[in-house]
Image 1 (spheres, one colour):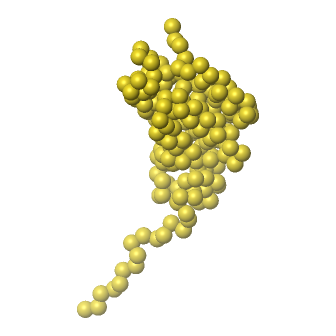
Image 2 (cartoon, rainbow, N blue to C red; image 1 turned 90 degrees about the horizontal axis):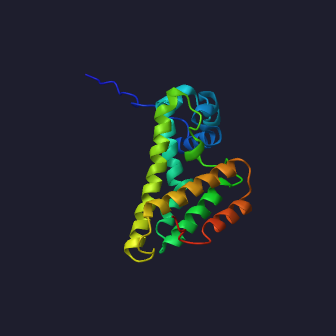
Image 3 (cartoon, rainbow, N blue to C red; image 1 turned 90 degrees about the vertical axis):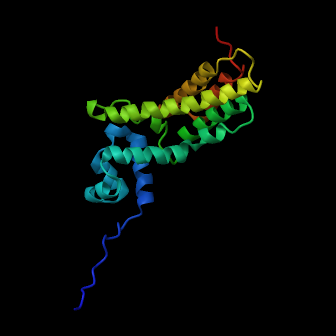
Length: 204
């Protein structure tokens, strides 16, 4: 008995998923989670709504994939900064990386992790929580690195790694907000240099 040959189980997507994700990242980065409509996303990605759902899931799942891409791409300076040999070099690299990333001419200004869900409605609570966790994760990594600096004698005994990490990360997020408001790279770098002029800062 002759058996009919079955066709392929799935049709190829017909688009570059990596490029589509990159374009979606730029839309979310510029407009935030709530401001990025499905129509704007699919138009930028060059695909239909059906294809977007099939490839990436719903809008929230797409945003989660975008945040992963942002962490491994534009925001990867944080992981590199933590490898610097001293706490001062770590702090310097974090703020310099923030300035560079938030002011690149080819990208939206500001930080996806800060602006992504600033004004979401109740339906965006999970995304807001996701970004809170994302920012806290970055802070925790910096705190752990500064704790190591205390243990190794690079930071003075009695230094508070948590407070220093909060100081650096909060200042970095402030840079991102200023960048989104149109403050230029040179001025932001001057601010970063001033913030680290007396390192480590003395807290009461």
